[in-house]
Length: 274
Image (cartoon, rainbow, N blue to C red; front, side, top):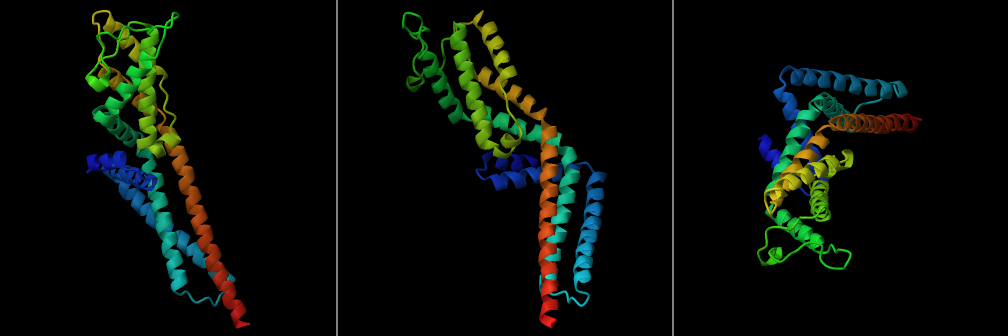
């Protein structure tokens, strides 16, 4: 079940679906936590009933003869549901870090397995390195034994530091762009950086070229995904803060609107009687 929702979250092109999938993952994680889930349900029901009671009290203080009809029932149902889900969300946010770890790991694995992305990024890296020139205007790297990927090439020359850094930057930019497009909500909250990944890949390249003439970019993809994932997971606290503030603001706004509409209805009843 968890794997299914993670796959749908990564594959989804709609922000609203991403949002609901993420919240659902939080609730699933809270359910696995055992007692916290049942405490949250009890708290959500209690607080929701209290909010509905307060709204009813306010309306009846405006008009003691107010006859609760369909409008009042509809408004209080929305208020109850909004309050209930807000409380559940606030309880579930304590499980943000494990959910973020699972989701980000899922993104990392999907990135590594995405053959189209790998092919396109490899082509970009190859062409970017090929565009580098030395002071005489010649190609910085010797591409004699390195055919273009369109005709079957699978490696990029990287004897110079400049060529290695160009290839690294291309892959890191591609990975960050992929994260932005597949995880728009998390991308909006979290700032994915590539500083540590760049250092790790460059070191891996340098060690590789000491003994081998070629470097498999699959290794760079794995390092980039892993380093970026670790950096994103470390920012899980930002998700808790922003989600808490947004949840409370939505709760307040919806209940204020409902209270205002029901109060207006009660005042209109008074005017009609006069």
